[in-house]
Length: 116
Image 1 (cartoon, rainbow, N blue to C red):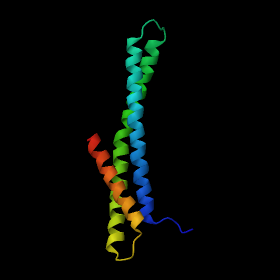
Image 2 (cartoon, rainbow, N blue to C red; image 1 turned 120 degrees about the vertical axis):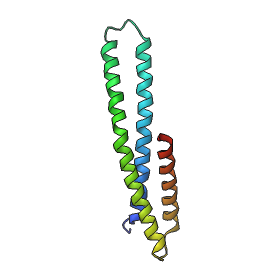
Image 3 (cartoon, rainbow, N blue to C red; image 1 turned 90 degrees about the vertical axis):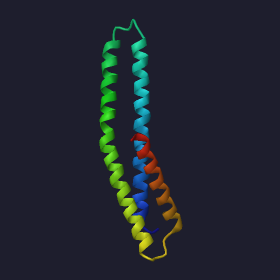
Image 4 (tube, one colour; image 1 turned 90 degrees about the horizontal axis):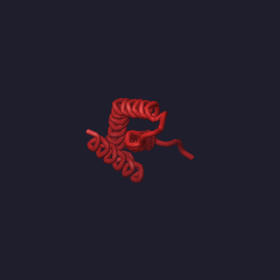
């Protein structure tokens, strides 16, 4: 089996990072829901501690986003560069890889717009 091309590696990297960012957003929503639930509950002697811990977890999750955005932007730039190299080289490019790369670029740009 032939080793993966630089284009397929860059495509996989972008897709993985976009998926990872989506999971962090989902995690943030779940944490915020737990905070709302803890705020409405009364009677638990440990509620204040749990609330502090959940708020800390939310802040830690939010702290991940700037570096995640930077990593996605870098991976996207690398993918776009690889796509230009493949298309500009005149060689017969694997159409499936090129299509996947273009789809990954589109997904990353949509993800970037949603957050911004």
